[in-house]
Amino acid sequence: MPQTRTCWRGERGVKTMPDFGAVHENEAAFDVAVAAITSGDLECGRAILAALRDHICSTGEQKSLQWLLPKALETLEALQPCTPIPTAYVREEEAVSH
Image (cartoon, rainbow, N blue to C red):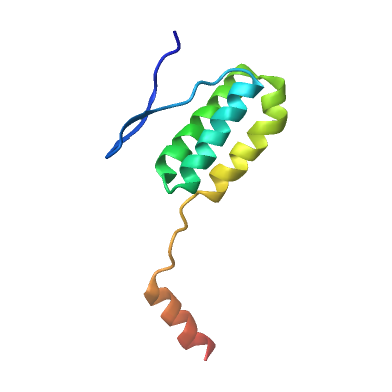
C-alpha cells in the first residue's frame, strides 16, 4: 500500500499527494500539480512539483528526467514569488532621472 502524503489541509478537507513512480504516474502527478495551480492552490501545486522533482532526481527514471523534470523545474521557477522593489527606492530613482 503506498504511503499517503498530505499536501494541505483546508476547508475542503485533507488532500493527499499523488503517487509517483514511472513516467505515467509522474505525468499524472504533474497534471494534478498544474490543476491545483490553475485553481488557485499555489501552495499545494508547488509542494507536488517539489516532491515530484525530488522523486525524479532520486530515482533517475530516464523518461521522467527527459520529459517531465524540465517542465516541473520551469513551472517551479515561474511560481517563485517576486520581491517587490521598495517604494522609497523607486521614488529616489525617479528623482535622480528627472
